Length: 183
Image 1 (cartoon, rainbow, N blue to C red):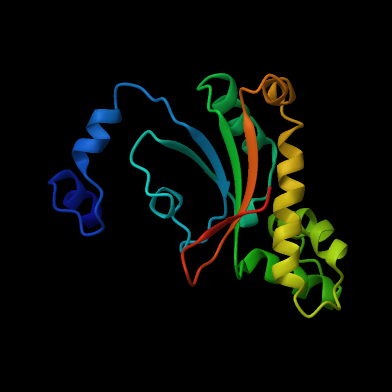
Image 2 (spheres, rainbow, N blue to C red):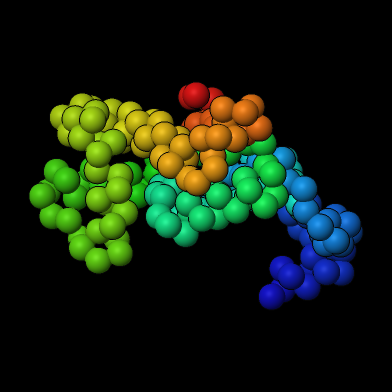
């Protein structure tokens, strides 16, 4: 709440400006929907240097896709006409690491956390648990797999075929801040 008070009074510590929020409040015309991880070190608007109304952000552990994420991306494409869907993974993702550990131990945590493990596991298996760089390689494989899943959203294949929407996969480097495009 203290941070919100600083924002509203025009005294933010982290550079966001309330006048930008007010300027975007009348409507939105975002140029992308970015599906990323919940990791607090990956603030999507900041790493892409975007202001209010510029991008739609959808976040889940390791950018795992469920019906809510698919519906959100579908809404951004159909109702907001975003021309870009970006899937952004990141280095040293805790959810990918947890999946690797769970698969190595043969102990799926079950429940909602188990859902994340189940969704990330195909990417880990595609790399192989014995690979010394399994987590990093699995993150990239998971991004690629998620990019393919975006084509399952109603209307997206048609929009891609018509040249109205592009889909990109990328990985964020926590150490350098650089985003590397994969697709």
